[in-house]
Amino acid sequence: MTAGEQIIVAVLFGGAAFLALALGLLGASRRLPRNPLFGVRTRTSMASDEAWRRIHVRFAPFSYAVAVLWAVTAATPFVTGWNEPLVLAGIVLGLVVLLVGAVRAHRDPG
Image (cartoon, rainbow, N blue to C red):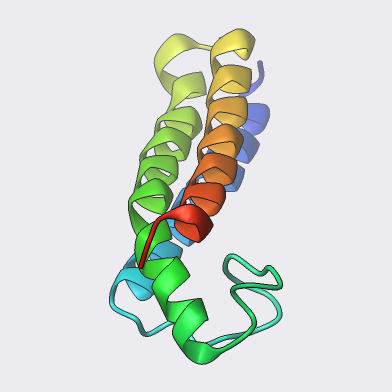
């Protein structure tokens, strides 16, 4: 992997990690307003401001986990030189955690 490709991976996943962290922090503090672009947007979460806040508070720990996973994924090319299976595992694992978190945030009793 070239240095330019390493930088692209780092910027993309560093940015994704930052967004996941921001989503967790804003959701946990109940300061993330209902919006059409950022957050867990489902029929249930968009039903009311209270539902939106409750779901994002529950989703926050999963968002933090994804932030860590994707920060590690961003650093992987620099630490390992380039380990494609490890980068792909970080991507997939982060997406799985997001999906599981969204489902759990909807199903947990409130």
